[in-house]
Amino acid sequence: MNKSLYSLSEYFSYDFVRYAFIVGILVSLCAALFGVVLVLKRFSFIGDGLSHVAFGAMAVATVVGVTDNMLIVLPLTVVAAVLLLGVGKNAKIKGDAAVAMISVGALAIGYFLMSAFSTSANVAGDVCSTLFGSFSILTLSKTDLWVCLIMSVVVLALFVLFYNRIFAVTFDESFSRAVGLNARLYNLFVAVVIAVIIVLAMNLVGSLLISALIIFPALSAMRVCRSFRCVVVTSAIIAVVCAAVGILASMMFSTPVGPTVVCADIVAFGACCLVGAITKRR
Image (cartoon, rainbow, N blue to C red; front, side, top):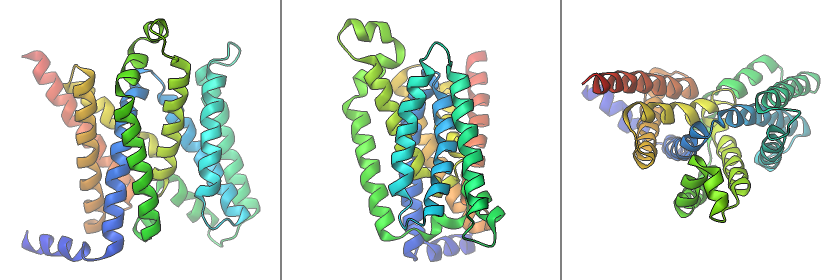
């Protein structure tokens, strides 16, 4: 036990480990808060589709040779969020068809570009790392930390500032329109914020596992809570704890950060299901 604690304290003596830990906590917290809204509005497909779009955008940035990938990945993912929400409302192309069309197309284009214009000898390894996460979270610079910190604070501030309106639009769009709220605008706002969160989370868990950060904490909280506020708070706590446990475990056992964090979320979901079943039975 003492040896493990010593190892952890030694790890945290390095700046890059502290940076990774802070970024992981912030990204997981933001994803959990807006994940509750996506799950309740049955918009989970947006998070899944945008994660695939982010992979395609990352491939474009790699081929073009842009030093800061976020300059391409963030704008393209935000545009995709707007298009996905608009196409999903189209009578001819329903939401499930829209997400399949955009996400599969982005994956195919991304892999094609990385294969055709490869800048590395290990294309398969690069693709796998981008899709499922790698140890790249441990190579974050101080600049990356500040960018993530600022964007996370903005996301959290927007959630708190528009909490009541988000709550209203989440549960009853018709009532929201009746009292003068622009429900479509707030749906678009949620989609754009989710796009930002997904871009921030790519270094942590990879593009294919991002939706787990968004969905699992919310579903876990819904197993044990009944009110919206309780679900939001519990989801945030679960996300932060799982991110911390996952990152620490990945450092101690030399496992990929993303899958380890997601495994922690899965364990938490199972535990919440068990607690919810016991509580309901009583």
